[in-house]
Length: 147
Image 1 (cartoon, rainbow, N blue to C red):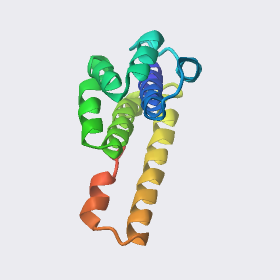
Image 2: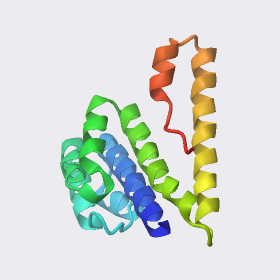
Image 3: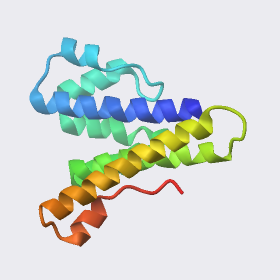
Image 4: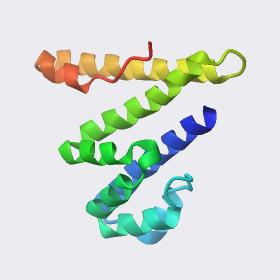
């Protein structure tokens, strides 16, 4: 389970970094120094896709079946916020499996990830209230719950 958590976390952080690099037109050297190997998609393929632009990254993302890449690409096409939410939910759904492991550090890691998600939700609610945002809009931005 820990390996899955690390894979999902690093993979989506790589995708986010590649998308930002593609948007800002960064060099291959910069992108290569930013990304890391994930075991899902090779670093070289990710760098090439980032140099090709957002569409190439989403194409590459769609092929990453083991980490829900097709759904993530669709979420990004809707909005980058939906993509962030999908990535967080994917990590949290992987972390939910930690609850059922009785011996080891997995339950603690799952709990820490759940707390992080709760804090993110509180920040979303607070900013929605502070800006007078419609409650429906705020609710659709909230992440899944751990429980």
